[in-house]
Amino acid sequence: MNTAAERSLTDQVRGAVLLPGDDGFDARCAGFQTAYRHKPSVLLRPAGPDDVVAAVDHAARHTLPVAVQATGHGLSAALDGGVLVDTGTLKGVTVDAPARTARVAAGTRFGDVVDAAARYGLAPLNGSSPGVGAVGYVLGGGLGLLGREFGYAADHVRAVELVTPDARARRVTAASDPELFWALRGAGANFGAVTALEIALVPVSRIYGGELVFDLDRTPGLLELYLRWTETLPEELTSSVSLVAYPDLPVFPAYLRGRYAGHVRVAYTGDCRTGERLAAPLRSAGPLLSDTLAEMPYTECGSIYDDPPVPHAYLGDNVLVRAVGPAQAATVTELAGPGAPVPCVVDVRHLGGALGRPPEVPNAVGHRDARYLLRVLTPLMGVTPDEARAAQRRVLDTVACHSVGGRCQNLVYGESVPGPADDFWEPADHRRLAELKARVDPANLFRCNRNIPPVRRT
Image (tube, rainbow, N blue to C red; front, top):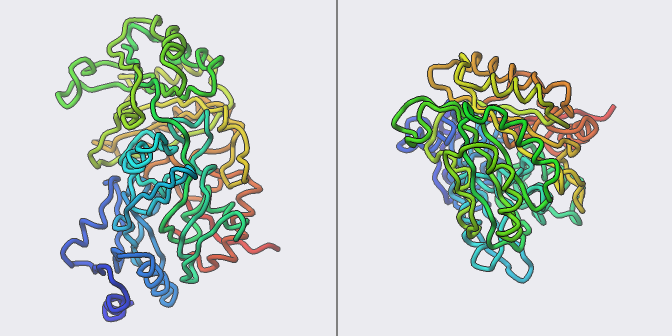
């Protein structure tokens, strides 16, 4: 591919076309994940969907791979050559309050969707971080703050606007193309460049939420206690527990420095009095380093996890399980502790409820029989990716006997381990997706993702 051909794309679009060496090229290739970055031969900052059509047509005519990036949180396979579509230029939220829906452009961050919906007493099914791109999160399933009550965010998609690999701009719904609509909600990055979603909103304007923080030296059995606590919770309460060994550094709050802390995060849509009653068994478990549980407007939901807003390098993986036994909880707590040779943040998320039921309109999000998700995250500071992966595997193998055979896309960070990424989907669904991929994208132009290689039915 030569520069003259790549420059020709400039004449076909209203947005900016950047090549290596151009001002702003390196900055636009960078994302929130700093361990990896795309290295395209041409980068497009589209002014609208028509520009995305031109970019995909350019890639198809020259047999170039296409990558799509909004915020770069979910980078999983770095592009080397080819076309990078920077959908961060496509922003905006339009709320239809009577219909309880919102049209969300591809570059919109979830914090903006939360704020727009809140004006009408509504909320989207967002995750823990308001800075994450809404569309990419939903295409991967969307395991969110209110998941146990309302299910996956993908369950609430009403329409998908995208440019398919044949360079057609389409609006796909359950009525217009049931098979592609099924696939887009759970494996969408494989089937084109999504420019907007229409999503359903839920009638939530306030929650009882926040976190309880424990010193694990004084409450060593917190993980086991948390798991017992979740056994009787109502679906309106979604929660998780994180185990973090903090170095003694001034970047952290004084009460956390040098401590091994357990963070129990809660989001409950019921009344405050019931929330206090449900939280009581945890509050009595031991002395607290911090207690922020309180009623809050849903616009403050980002404070529950208080995810770091600064781009950094990290790897993460997870496993979906039916249970975590007491002995396993103790082993996980030890492996994540301050004595670990490679620091790991361990996170256990309570599933079930609506997350365990099929949606009204079926989609590709599977493994719904899991009751918990065990996630491991490692900052890549003085640690190689191989060392991080090995440390994470030791933790995840602890609960392998209870695995349902899959992982959650939303909580896998960094480049994929070599090999097929078929455990994100049920085996039968993966075969179905691969056959659809062969019809929609036989050249696998959209492969810089949790990729599903095209397979024709034999």
